[in-house]
Image 1 (cartoon, rainbow, N blue to C red):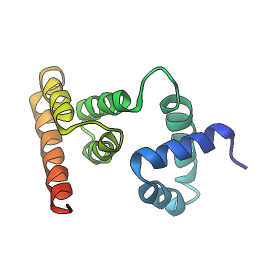
Image 2: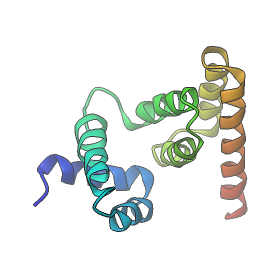
Image 3: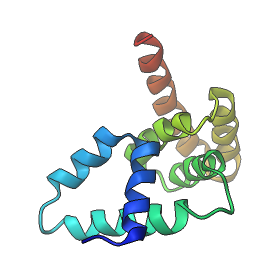
Length: 127
């Protein structure tokens, strides 16, 4: 049986990143990957994202800045979707990515702008 923190993290993770994505990651986790999925769900989401000190929108914008700085394009794309789910606007995302250009480097920001632009086009084409 999973802890209450895990269950809260699972709920929050599904709400932000989408149940389909989260459930696919959890169901495809083998014995090697399952401990990481459990850790991410319980501690990243259940212990940190669930804290009351920052709202989800703010956490999403912070994540986009950090993931850009770390040059993690797969995670940037995933958390762009989460940021939109959390109510961040295209303009707010743009401002955060511009800020990263100054403090994290232009190449990192260029990559994240590219990823965001592709995602925004994809979303627009589905309307």
